[in-house]
Length: 217
Ligand SMILES: Nc1ncnc2c1ncn2[C@@H]1O[C@H](COP(=O)(O)OP(=O)(O)OP(=O)(O)O)[C@@H](O)[C@H]1O
Image 1 (cartoon, rainbow, N blue to C red):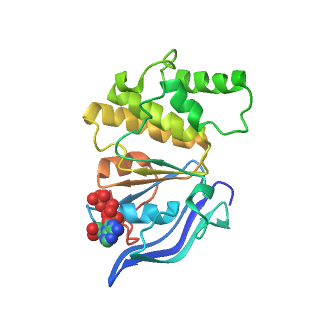
Image 2 (cartoon, rainbow, N blue to C red):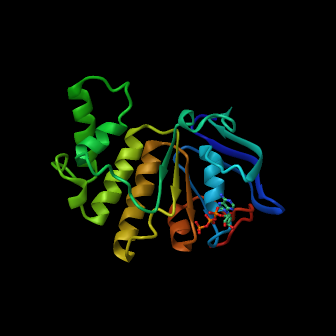
Image 3 (cartoon, rainbow, N blue to C red):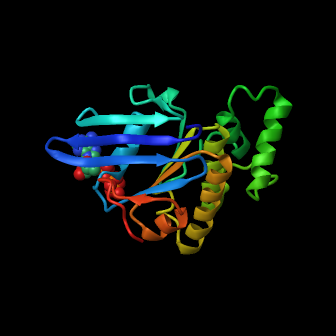
């Protein structure tokens, strides 16, 4: 069960409309995909997992992280990392400051924290960029820093909500590979939401519609 995200008969309805019906176990280092058109319920499924589902929706079933039922846990205690369409970096902090913000408190001492940040930047081809203003980064650099920041927080699972959709083709393939590699290396279960079959193929894991149909690629 360690490192597993399980959706156990998770259903979400909005009035009479069933949006989500998923039973799925994602293992550590695996990237599963929920694929469907706009409005089909993909983001709604992620909101249930993070605990941010709007009051209009009704959920049944359970969400388990490492065997523990987190369905009723407050969002901040779920320890789930999230990436959205647009990488959000704090504009008032340097690149290094953005990463430092995410580091967990168990990494103690200035030197140790600095080392973790330098190591993360170097591993992403961004050695020496700690003092940069995020506004001066390219789209690809921003995307990499945003992912580093999310992973430095040591999340128990990673959710990706269309994180590549605003990138042009070349960059998209590059950032997609970087993201999936990092997710696998982090050894955490990852769930990607996309409407793009190429993204789903590249993820390499099971691909389901929000209503739980297995989708051929
Ligand atoms: N707070 C809300 N109240 C009522 N309806 C909502 C609310 N949020 C979303 N919806 C509706 O729920 C349905 C599913 O939305 P959701 O955002 O999950 O779809 P999606 O597959 O992620 O779409 P997209 O790819 O466009 O982000 C849509 O019909 C949407 O209009």
